[in-house]
Length: 219
Image (cartoon, rainbow, N blue to C red; front, side):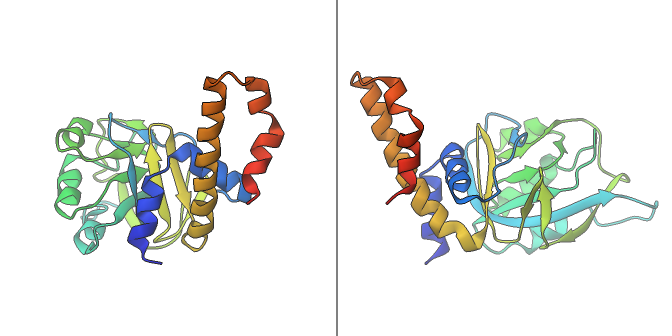
């Protein structure tokens, strides 16, 4: 199936629904702590993974993340950046402008961002653990890209699917996306029906009984 149509389906859902679908399937992917760093829109795309780490010497290096941005040729990318250090930035407004020029959909950082007003001013979505003013220069370097990374305890591979909104960030393995979407769409329909039932006066205890949720996984 065309990945764009999968992205459209994913975009029609939210992180709560995708997290529930992963739970039903026994899959990891939902994270805690990777939240919007300004009042930014939801992002949905495919992961371009980047691994950061501490700089061990004083030799000049190419600025972290910039080679990955330069290499992007598709319009479905979300930068998934692992290895952030406490108190130190691994994202900023110059990178945000470069990413916007490449039609990158947003960044998810297991770490911190500086210059967050710069990202906000151009409407570039940034999700992560928080903000700082401390530069990464001479403190953090890019170690690798395109390889599996750990994001808040979840292993994310290049081209995995990403959805992030006000509740947080969820990663979906690329080889399981269709079954996750199929189940997520059933969950969304069932939950819409449950809301309608409560509004119509049905007992919430009855509507939210475990058996009602278990029935979601049954076609």
